Amino acid sequence: MSPERWERLLREVVQIGGVRGAAVVNADDGLVVHEAMMDELSAGDVAALASAVVLRSAAMLRALGEPVTRMVTLTATAGTVVAVPGQHDLWLVAVTAPAAELGRLRLLLGDLVPELA
Amino acid sequence: MRVLEPWLAEPLDELVRESNARLALIMTSSGQVIGQHGFTRSLDVMAAAALGSGILATTAELARVVGSDGEFGAVVHRGQRHGVWLAGFDTPRGRWVALVVFGRHSTTGLVRLFFERFANRVRDVAPTPTSTREVLAEGFERELDASLRALFGSN
Image (cartoon, helix red, strand yellow):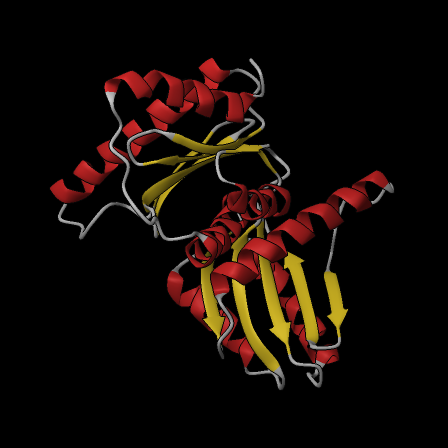
């Protein structure tokens, strides 16, 4: 996928109300492939921590007999992290503020999954 | 875990724990070991220290050749089962080197993140050296023995 396409894809995500940033992350090495961070968030830190979480979530689901992870959502008082897997160990990760439009974000991320191929 | 200086234990423990590292080695840029986690044989740690500091020195020269300002931030090797993170960082005691070996339960990004926190913490808590001791030939072997005992117990 071209950098322009990554850019367009992430721009769509960060335009949703309350989204603080989004990044395409390689879960295999925990590094950022492309990012669109809106505030003081460090994309590198988000990528490292999100990849550690999604890999464990996916492993747990496999252990429970569900081989395919469709979405990982972590909710905290300070906001939410939503991650959807693409191909080749790539994950699209979005970080939101507490009052974000989560329903719309989840729908959009679901729609964008095929584009991560 | 073994450290030559007690103040290093907590930052090193945090680095190892948070990054899921299998082995960690903290040394001076000349290869003198300051702390280690996971190594069981002094021969292994001395070899790793010599190779790690050598690799970093080589890449610093490579950085110079390609026109980079200073050394590369970090050198990362990824194998089938293990990865190695090797990076230099400044401390009040001079430039030190960290070598972190991690397995499949960690990632380069995770090690990078917690290495940066470790380096910042060491900068904050490392006591500034009060005087530089001259290492005399007759005292060198005794100091080396004491360092190895501290790093590997009574071996």
